[in-house]
Image (cartoon, rainbow, N blue to C red):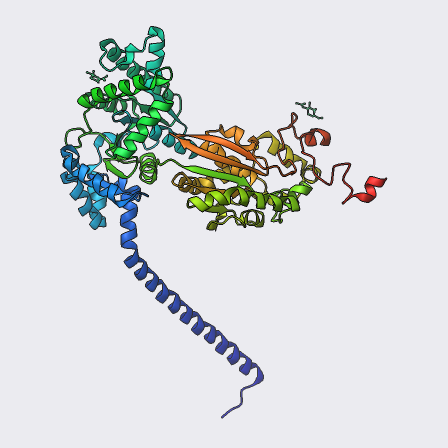
Length: 582
Ligand SMILES: *[C@@H]1O[C@H](CO)[C@@H](O)[C@H](O)[C@H]1NC(C)=O
Ligand SMILES: *[C@@H]1O[C@H](CO)[C@@H](O)[C@H](O)[C@H]1NC(C)=O
């Protein structure tokens, strides 16, 4: 045996270590492939059910070959549901649609992914396919009075507007009332009045015209909320939109078989409808009863066997959602929203965290703890809420930051920390005071004042960003009752803005003071606001838009609306005592 020379030895060592590396490399590769196979296999097995439910719930509209139904969860006693099913089976027209050949075809398609694709493409109405995905969309609501059409229209509009689709609702009854004002008599809109019927038809025509004009003007969705849309009118509208205007069109039929819901809707109409403002209660009830009977005699439900239109049927305000020949991006979003929609009465509570140590110093962002006064607010909040919490079931949603968790600590209800509720991320300006921002980043500060809604902090967020991340929270919240949201200024501005239909540009300047509980109670599609101010002192953190937003403005101009905080108050001695004495 020959000894290796020194260089040969090191070369061999190098070779060995390389080979070692390669060996390790192959081993790792093997592991990766193996785990990938395991993952894929596992996912596939688990995934089938999930995929199916997703198809049924939202994007299933892509398989728009026939009818399929989405039965959604609902917080209701079981007995109501079975009653409802019986009612449903007894109604022949509905049963025919549910049992229509299209329905079973849709299910068969879902079994086989390949077939789904071909089947769907072949079955989508040729009309609808010709129209671009980006064409404006006209939504036509169909259904008897008191079936929740207006509520659905406005909720949907709110949701779409928030998601960047500019949407407007055209309510037939507004037009009718305008005509009525000319005649100045209530008899005109009584159901048995011939003249009234003519006025109603005229109002419907005008509402449709305005809806079409608004779509031509660049709105992306218009919702036409009428009552008496007959089969013939539907056909006409459908053809007019698709062939003449090149708009997409979707019909939404509201059906309500649930007596309890129906009664609630009727009570709401009697309370809030402009029609019954000046009437006595008996008169109003009598009138509405007559009106309902009259409409019911003439109502023609949408029949998938006869009518070649895209439609969604919403039963009992979102309990069951049925889609027929629905295709397109906007429409799938709408279908998803409708299948998740509940319209149960709700009460929601919002509050900012108690005053934090950063609030006192006028600093933004950060993850500071509560100040002493903030802690007093936390106790006061718990004292206010706990008696209510004892009576009904509540839940508390906080952000992931310390100050909201500390504020909610004493409330005796289950708590959940939601990341999407975190305060706006101020990026490079986190932890600065406005004075420091002006000193270090005067240009950024001015740009923010110019357009606070869209301005995004470098490495941080804008209001638009928060709106986007709040979408799932807001959808979830629309379905909740008795939730206490403990949040932050910017986030609550957006959330309250959503429920109160604030204009987007006003959102960043909405007044949401510290140490105040904001109580929202739903009525119809609107919300009543109550501000419950706790008598605990705190700093003001609301900074108005200054007059001069130019980037060349002076420091004084930039800081003119900054609210005072402790280290700038002349009477405050605890931080700058040395300066104060000078
Ligand atoms: C509904 O429309 C039909 C056809 O346009 C009409 O005959 C009927 O009177 C209308 N009903 C009401 C209540 O307006
Ligand atoms: C803002 O301030 C700048 C510089 O001080 C001044 O030139 C400009 O005219 C001011 N603009 C307004 C709108 O006051």
